[in-house]
Amino acid sequence: MEDTGVKLRFNVPVSGQKLCTSYPSAREKERFMEAAYDRWVFTLYVDDMPVRGIVGPPVEQNAVEVKDLSRVKIYTRFSFTMEYNKNRVVGVSLEMKAPTAVDGPSLDLTYDVKWEKSEKDFVSRYENVMESELFTSRAHWIAVINSMAIVVVMVAIAARIVRNLLDADIQKYSTVLMDDDLDVELADIAAAESGWKQIREDVFRAPPCPSVLCSLIGFGNHLILLVLSFVVATLVGNLYVTPGHLAKAFCLCSISTSFYAGYYATGTLYRMTGNVSTRSHIMSSVLSIGGMPILGAVFFLPTNLLSSIAGSNLTIAWSTIFKLMRVWTFYCLPPGLLGSRVAKNLHEHAKPHPCREVPRPIRVRFLTSPVFIASVSAVMPFSCIVMEIFFILKSFWALKMYYIFDTLLIIFLLLMAVTASSSIVGSYVLLSAEDYRWQWSSWGSGAFTGFYCLVYSMFFYVYNTNISGVVPTVFYFTFSLFFSSLLAVLCGALAYLASSIFVKKLYANFKSE
Image 1: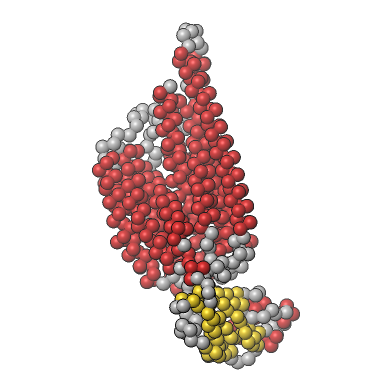
Image 2: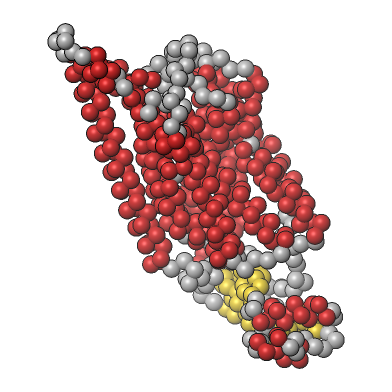
């Protein structure tokens, strides 16, 4: 963003105030022509409220083809209308006036400010800037109903399949054990012992890189609590009325939930492996707490450096970056480390489930491989949120305000239900194939949702945006990678949590039978 230089004083009207005089070069005049022909729109923020104006009146195509600048005009007068109630600004509008041909040597830019008294409440001042054509109630409720239908179908299918298969397996196994006929064929016993029952001594074996997995799970649980608390706080407190309150609420929610991130990551690591080195303990704690700033640094620091070198207005101020680092270091990190320490004290002597000394060999098959099962399991969760992703991308890249947090909360709860159901079904299929590598597979069944989101963002870039230039394109894909990574970690933690509960219940019921 750039400061336009427009000076506004409360309830002080202005008429014909000179803003600046521009002496455009030949190249800049051609860019004015392109902007007017393509109907470019710019956005200004007045008292944190966005107002939009158009660059110039319509331009005929033949004028562009022959580059006749005398027929190309841009607006040079900004006419602001400010609405106020007592001592608060409750509305703002912008009208562009004075179309001027760009073929002259200079352009004089001026502005007017008119103040009008209004009965509108300060709380409702954003109603005019919430554009109904982008977020129509009908379109959004259709998306919600579609997601709810997917949830009902997916949960019903998952419950039916798992219940029927489990009942059949347990009944079959119990019948073989209770059969008093000494002539029972070994084939029947082998059939009863096939599938997930065969790997009961390997199913709780620690996965490869347990500290990394636990860090991702802790980070994901942090994101789950952060999203839920932030959306609920926004709805309850109407925080979108003042954009600055959204940033403050996000920071407070992040600080208040960082304790759980460190606690869950360290506790899961101790329960999973039992013997944890100091290095693994520290790494899992820091990664689970600092996942978001680490991802932000990896993705945005190089992009921001490129933007600053190119002189783009997309550059994030380095002072803002240092402020965010300071908030994380002094406010988010200490509660997370405290949670990690509490988990260490509580679970330091935890003993993992006993496993056989020699791991059972795994028969590798493509259709039951962890990667294939994870990729298929993520299709339903992604289809549940694809419409909401469209609205979010449209809001973000069209510079429009996103305010439908109620439907966002509903969609997020539906995403949790579908991700859990898909993960349980995928884990059961994997265990039935006598493959005990369910930990990473269950996490991947949720993480693939983020991958599909990244693919969709590429599709959105091609068909729904007019972004051009190196820096804007790099920024688009940087943001897409960042948010897709966050979604992958969040859904991965959801999927692992659901599968972990299911696997423990499954083998606990099997032992009781």
